[in-house]
Image (cartoon, rainbow, N blue to C red; front, side, top):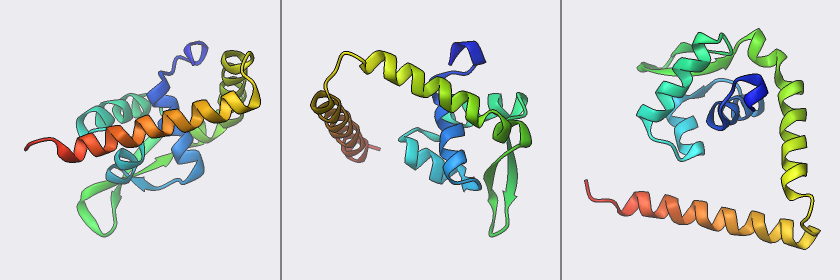
Length: 122
């Protein structure tokens, strides 16, 4: 994502919003397994670039919903194509079965990380 001046987490936020615009920051944080402070900073940078905007949550004055701007929507095709090329290049030497195994292992690691979060002392 470097040619587009985006970090992987910034791209991930855009990708989640391309799938479902209007998520709350709490929902997005849960989907990304990301803490509120880190997520807020990333969203701040995307807002400065006019790719996303925060809007007040109609049912909760303390919360915000995240929406793509026209610029955020407009870069979807180019960024998705770039992501597809990157994924193809890094997995080109894997067989189909190896790709499936890799995805399974990565998901297993992610869910293990989620369980660790639940076990942390307060």
